[in-house]
Length: 85
Image (cartoon, rainbow, N blue to C red; front, top):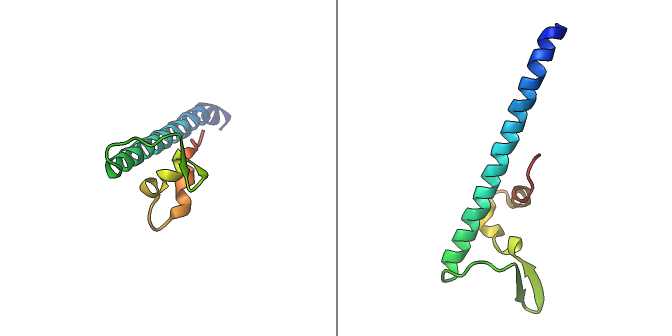
């Protein structure tokens, strides 16, 4: 059993890391698509890092949140800005 475990544990660890990597790539794709959708809505203007709206500083991630969140789960949007690894 110990030999089998010694063989399988590294395989499972690699598979888990590959799944995390795929999740991170998916998050980056969603962020990129959100930025493209934002730019299409605002006359091909890219989102700036800081925007001043009503004398308040609004960061870029707040502006693209409507484009990256799932409508039924708005709390899921901040998760795409963190990689699972």
